[in-house]
Length: 386
Ligand code: P1T
Image (tube, rainbow, N blue to C red):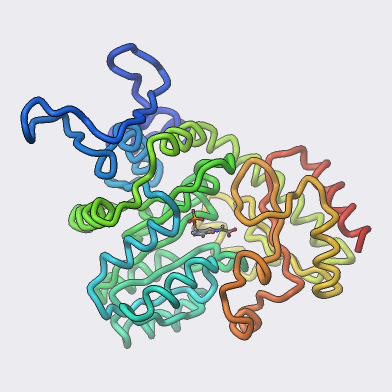
C-alpha cells in the first residue's frame, strides 16, 4: 500500500490494490462473490473467514482508497451514511460534536434524529475560523465534523487552521470529502484525522453504486471502526466494491472534465440576466476564492445558483432541462440537477434552511462530462421556458 503514496493520484487509481490475480494472471481483479471461506482446521485460514468481516475484492478497494487519500487505513462501507454512523458510534456517549451548519441533509438528519440522544451537537458556520477556534477552546468537543465545500452552499472551511486548533484541545477532526474527491483535496495531508466519502458520488462516478468510505492514519481508531463495522454489519458488497474499483480507474480524467465544464458553465451563469447569484469556488466572486485556490487542487464540478423568479421559476427551469437530469445525487458522469429545499435538504426544518440561505430559488448542478456546449444549450432551454 505504502509504495504508492508518493505517486500521482492518476497512477494510484489504476494500480493501488489492483494487482493481477495470482492464479490466472487476470489483469482485472475478480469479484470474490462469496459469503464465506474454507478453513483448513478451525481458526486456520488465509485471513478471510466471512465476508461481513473481510472480502478480497473489498480489501483491494480499501487499499486503493487509502492510497488515494494518503492514509494508512480504509474501510469500505455499504453507504456514505453508514460510514458516518460508524464514526458516531466510535465516540463515547455524551460526546460534544461541533458540526458545520451547512451539511448534506441526510447527515443533518442522522445527527438530529438518530444520534441527538447519544451526543450533543453544536452547529456552527465553520467558515468563521476565529469563532470556531473560540468555541473549540470553550466547549472542548470530542469531534469536529466538516464538509468543505459544503452541500449545497459550497462554503469553504480552513482545514489547516481548524485541524491545528482541534489538536490543541484533543478533538478528532473529520472531513466529508465527497464534493472534491481525493483528486482535488486531501484533508489528511492538511492535518485532518479522518476522511469520509460517499463512494456513490465522484469516486465511483457512474451512478450505479451506493457506498461509503472512511480513511485514516490512526491505528487504534481504525481498529475501533473495524470492530464496529464487523459488529453492526454495513460492509460494502463484493460486487459493488468491484464496480467502485473499476469506476476509480478513470477518476483523474473524469474530474478534469467535470471541472473544465463546470468552470465554463459557472461563467455562463454568472453573466446570465435570469440568474441572481452563482456559487462556485472557482469564481473570483466566491467569498473564499483565495482559500479555495490554496487548500484545494481544483474547484470541482458542483455549482449552485439562485434563479430569479422564486419557486415558480425554479420549478419551470428544472422541468425543462433535458441533459441535466432532475435527480438527487451528484458526481456521476451524467449531469444532474436538483432543488435542495424540496429534495436533498428537505429534512432540514424550513426556518433553518431560510437562515442558511437554502432558499426556494436555489438550484444545484452536478456538472457531468458531456459536451459543454450541449450542456450550455440545455441550460438556455431551461431559462427560455421560464
Ligand atoms: O448517499 P450516501 O452514499 O449514503 O452518502 C451520503 C452523503 C454523505 N455526504 C455527502 C456530502 C453527500 O452529499 C451524501 C449524499 N448526498 C446526496 C445524495 C445529494 O444529492 O446531495
